[in-house]
Image (tube, rainbow, N blue to C red):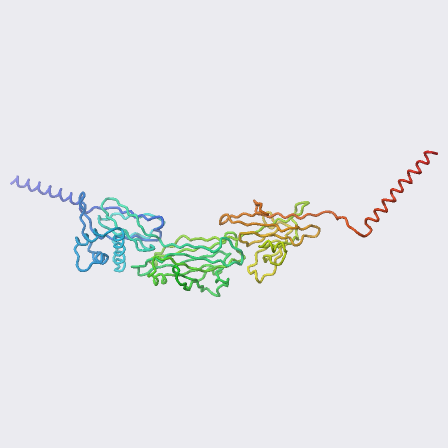
Length: 497
């Protein structure tokens, strides 16, 4: 009897040991899954979800998969199968998928089925911040699908979680937009054409999808149509075109200071054009450069997107800088090098006009040495700029704001009384070097201080012809000579006496 009891104890110990061994390798294992995104993606404002498609047991090199009943129907749909399916049958169907494309298609098809069926994920992250990795802790071993919200297209990833720590690199891309302008530098009064380029996202499986473009102008720009006419209210029409197709008009809304913020909600438009998902589209609109423009006149566009309205992501603004430049003149007199008031200048964009001294000069507004290029060159009349007698800025006494890069010619049309005006046009070249940097040259010689020096000279009265001038001087000269001769003769006579 004692021997029998010992055998029973030994048997129980062996059974418990075996059970513990099986548990160690087959069930109960936990893992950390690290999810990473590529450089063209972001997790900011997004959530990650994992779906355990199969339970997994591991014993050495042996792997046992059992379908997760929660997702069995979605797996069958994603594989395109019909009727009842066994766990082994589904495992075989997935293992026989041929090549990366087929596997990716299955992953995306399952994601679509899960989203449309509103199936709860096995685990979901919180809304993420500015990170490019996230760890799912305490996952059971299994075959998982990893899904990221808000990507340009559904591109979920599949991963076997079969050890203590595994990683998966998501291949999806975040939606993005790019903004360009049809001019690198601008002049006040110029109408600039802006183009935003994006890609129609895949909204398959999403009950909702947000896709809103936000655009903000600086004070030197105003939204207009192609002719430079500002909208009469906050309704603003833009042009939207898919590829080389026909453009359509879409309504945007203006708001903010002086209506310089534009909101273009393309959420429904994106859903209506899913037949063109993945294709490039463009948004076109216009802005006019106003008198408040400065060197760093710019606007920026950002994209707000996401498949959950309460959890959207806004991209970093894509900024377009269209600089406009100043022209500063230091008008001085040659004797004391002091600031000279009253010199009248005109600025020409064509050398022929400058040499002819005609009325095709650039129109300006302003006074007392401080001027701005007129916004409407067709209706403005004043083209004369008059120098100030004192400094109005950093080392100059005549300032003109609002020029694009290029060649110009300065003509002095009138010098102050008592001074000689310059006799030939001065060539000035403005060149862009960076968004906020530029160079100025005078007659092809660089001006490091970006100031054009113009000096007026003054002198004595020049000799004249006519009148009594030369006759008087001749008579006086003869009389002086005659007096000298007479004096000499008298002196000789006294000496001889």
